[in-house]
Image (cartoon, rainbow, N blue to C red):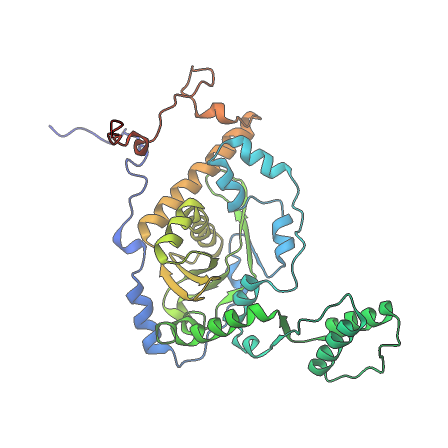
Length: 366
């Protein structure tokens, strides 16, 4: 006899990593769309139209980091212990002092605005502790700005430096050190050449420096994400998060290893989940652009596996639920939370399998 199931309740998903084949597009969908439409003008993205269930704003990184909502960086701390999250949450964001030139920041913006590649100038190796060095640097900036000051070596050092600071503030060029010039030239070449020019096609119409602020539906907690870039299906055939990563890895395998070590899947899974909830659009693919900061300064474009994104979404949901439970209880336990229930925080320890290597015999007689 068939059992009456009308009074049954739906339980938890037996496989939290399961998804339907149609949940995530294959990269060929994007490739086919780009090949057919790459000569068409980009469709503008209007942020107010994306803000269906939250706020979508173009703000500064400092404003984003200081906002009270929970971001992926804090949630990754929960996966260590809840106390790691609490410590991260309680410590106020302090902006780091930036160098005059940051390769990652420049590359990030130049990929969206390639004309920046032509606004780069190599600074002379002048000794700014001497008047001669300050004057050399001043003449360099004057040549970029099309200006000319009457100062010479008879002026006071403080006055010369004040004029130099002013000329720097007026400069429209990205001034770099000689050692960065090789990297920028390689970056420019790869931007246009990689994959037959696929990078500018993927980024056609994309937006950067946009923050998404919303609410996690399952917990009611406020969350935030800020992708490096994002693009919409009207431009490239898919709604995509496009992440930009600089790396010192000398091969793709090492980069992927580092991605797992740094839990990139949590960030990327959270991006897709939160942006989909806020916009009502199905952001269901992640493209990662990798840039080497070591020779040969190559780039790579990587299409994230749905399995890894699904794992990231599961870790995000596990982390946000843990935060909610801790907030409700008013307690954020540390490493004792990793022990079995009733063990009073005593954690069973077992060395990893690689430590069980067979010892090679040693002949001490000879």
